[in-house]
Amino acid sequence: MTPQLQQAIKLLQLSNLELVDFVASQLEENPFLERDESPPEAPDERRGEAQSEAKETPQAEVDLSDDKSLKDARESLDAEYEDVDPGASGSDAAAADYRTNDWASATSGRGFDSDDRAFDERLSKEKSLAEHLTEQLHVATRDPAQLFIGAYLIDLIDEAGYLRESLPVIAERLGAELVEVEQTHTLITSFDPCGVGARDLKECLKLQLIDADRFDPAMQAFIENIEMLAKGDLKGLIRATAADEEDVREMIAEVRALTPKPGYAYGGGAVQAIAPDVFVRQSPDGGWKVELNSDTLPRVLVNQRYYAEISAASASDKDKSFVLEQFANANWLAKSLDQRARTILKVASEIVRQQDAFLVHGIKHLRPLNLKIVADAIEMHESTVSRVTSNKYMATPRGLFELKYFFTASIASASGGEAHSAEAVRHRIRELIDAETKDCVLSDDKIVEILQAEGVAIARRTVAKYRETLNIPSSVQRRRMMLQTAI
Image (cartoon, rainbow, N blue to C red):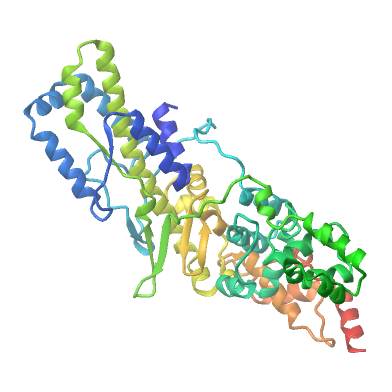
């Protein structure tokens, strides 16, 4: 694998913030690169002006046409790039407009589909709070619904460790049951650092006290009246807690030893705001319009006139070799940035096409999706799709999601038709159980029969496993609980 190919693959997997840093470093190092300051709406026109300027100088025309080593290098560069992306073209005139795309008319073409080995990342960073929580989420559950909801909740947690949005609002936005969002939120609040995911200070302190086994009735009353502590109202706290002054002073010392902003204890820095790489909007005809966020796309120009001047002034073979290498690298970077943008758009467009029901109806309607389905649809390698879906975000009417959120497990159809998302099947199981009465409690076998009648091919043990992941007791336990409630 050549260094240029490694760079192209690396660019594909960088987040937009990392890409900005990388391009900035290249602008500093390469004399033939310059930032494209033209309006994002008209990048092609700006490129055309730059090329016209180069052709206005007769010396530039001579150097660019007569320098055989440069011509050979550029032909080699184009050939290698064709190996990376057979759909790419060396000419600007042949390059497709990649900034907007309608998923219904998404074109196919191969991307960076060569197999590759891992190589060192240029940009290193300290693990963030979100990454720390995500790791714990994947250890704590394998339920696709909880993983999806949990990932979304984690993205909403601020740098201090608080979840500021209302759970009912989140449930409505995702099209999920409120109880599922609440259960997932409870799971996240059990993660390290203690107190993370709280909606306010009182809940944050409460979580830490429960973890320390110190949340007794007196302490609960103390936390509920924490405003009195800020006011210095010791007598008010004594009345509220029904404790003596010594006990209240001990509680004050305990609370002051807690961490009011647990997020700051991990990662050491503020979490940067996430800018979407792709916007998804509903079009007037009822479809979906997929558009790249031009604000996150660094744009560069290759200064051909300056190259012509420098190459003409280079006397030694060493100088000529350096100039040629830098110019080739500049061209390659410009091409790689263009291809990265078009590849992200292709993958995002196919995901929207596959998951349009989720955008309309919510989480219950997520379709089964994996890397191979998307890769086959747009004729790219699975490894390319994997890189694109990591650290890339899509802004939709339902919120901001990382592209990889949309890949779910599947269950075969009993009729041989379209498969069912495992997440959707879990939703259906919960619906059936929520509708039970004390005279009609469904056994796992009965649930299998109902699902089979609805076209879902599923085994009894799978129903039992899904029921357990949803924290739903067995039919015997549920019947007993209903009878006790009735008594």
